[in-house]
Figure 1 (cartoon, rainbow, N blue to C red):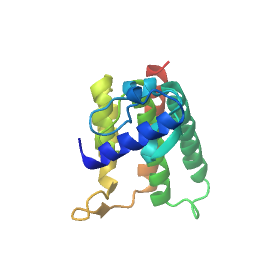
Figure 2: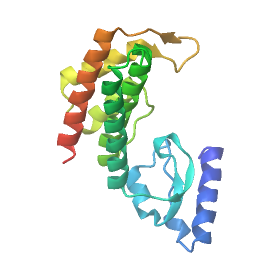
Figure 3: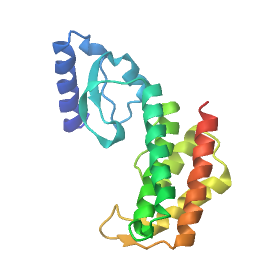
Length: 188
């Protein structure tokens, strides 16, 4: 077990013991192979890496993470659509990033619902993770993967940012709406 994970487990167990929980049943979520199912037995307190945050606190049910992600995604999508009317404030680059957050939240909602997580949060990794748990329509999969080409910012050696056109933003909104529909239909 990597040192950081070992330290986090100890921290989590200490916090659980302080709350009077059975620390043997507390399993912090990690990217080292522990599933969200392992989080269900955590009781009130555990270490959470969900949504990129490290927190010690109340663990929500999987359904709550799903609902929160859907709500956030809906808000991002609504903001992007409204931003089309204010071109001086909402540039295509800003709209791309807002829509990217909507897409990420819809993907995470589906993955939370299916008790799974992506390796990373790039469009490619999100699509791969979703494809592992559901039959993602091929056209939607390709549309989402194509969006990766506008920003590849994870590696400094291959850092790329291309400004999308307004037409590309309109297409991205349609792709986001297709994803929204797919996620909500799949998770009903």
